[in-house]
Length: 270
Image (cartoon, rainbow, N blue to C red; front, top):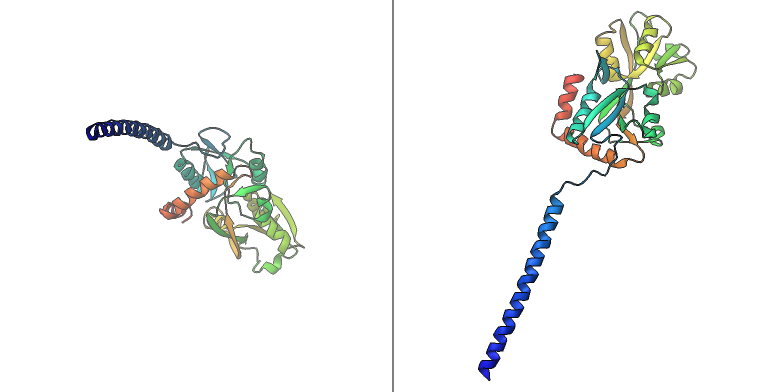
């Protein structure tokens, strides 16, 4: 009786072990498939106008931030967006557009994924487009001719002043010089040309570009005053494409952390 029971137990144990082994094999197969699945690269959650390409709009009239050099568009912003796109596995296609159309073009969502063009982050624009995290701090500057005799902002109270249409310089001029004769220009070089010919007495625009201009091709001009507005530049994307802004934010942070941002600033801005 004892021997028969032992034999039965042995047979039962063998059966249990066989089932357990089959179960382990099945689990092992499932785990392998899961591992292979998780190792596959997931598709990005953001949308692009053209697969594999980041379509970028910019207004290349703001040296050293973005400007035309022959047939090429270059500058700090252009190099930055190229670096961001490259780290995202994309090719940056940068195209020239008028500054005062950038927000509406990106908001449209059919031609451009984003725009980078020394665009100040503000509440009004944020109602129409989504900004990335800021990547550059700036102020405004008032530029006048060296021999104009203008030594104070007070002398511009009722004078002819200019700024780029749709810019923070335009906004500041309207708010702080309400009695001045304000003229908008689509591009800053056109405003500076008007300054040289005496059509306007001052041009108000971002400090980095103003410093570059008066040190190089506009040496007959000078900065009357730097206005500490504490502006910050951001890249704009479509409101419905927040995932693209998040992906860019990851790269902006990495570019800052590994020192690439400082290298680009040194190379293009000095």
